[in-house]
Length: 201
Ligand code: GAR
Image 1 (cartoon, helix red, strand yellow):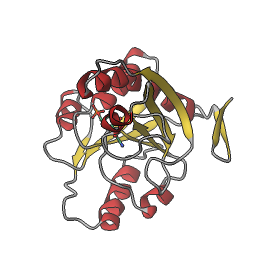
Image 2 (image 1 turned 120 degrees about the horizontal axis):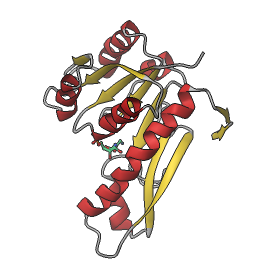
Image 3 (image 1 turned 180 degrees about the horizontal axis):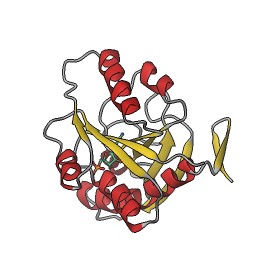
Image 4 (image 1 turned 90 degrees about the horizontal axis):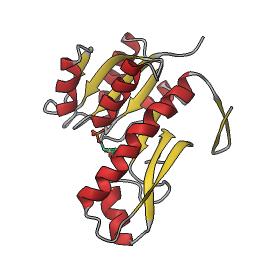
């Protein structure tokens, strides 16, 4: 039987989370959002989740030691029987403890073609570097920043007159497409991992 229950971790706007929820509502993704967790009280995404009637948990992380925080996070995710953790604009590094609690069961979306431009402000990094193409990446999360095996990527052209805003919007539209697709592949088990390569089967 395929896995179904997703736990969403977010810190901000939550548009990727909304796109996942839309795909579920439209029937293109067979999954259930078991819980949406924010480490920031004021994250607009958590308000959206409440409006959708989803189970929400706010766990302020500021000043809490990483592993102590992550232990509580793992407890809450397990309490909701989460099969797959989806980071959706979750702006906090995960501890080894967390990663080991969900081996190959954590996905992240990042607004660049990894391994280019990891970390913060990937769109600024792409503009500053002068690349002609950038994009977005859905990858498994390991203990290193923006590093695990890549499930899907989408390529986005950089136009000469792009600003941070116009480029970010073009990338975000692709993020909203590929995240749900990648979640479906992983939940249905339609892949195998060979070294760093995720082979879709
Ligand atoms: C997205 O662009 C996502 O790729 C990025 O934060 C934004 C969150 O938007 N994540 C990272 O940069 C992680 N390194 P959202 O809250 O509207 O989904």
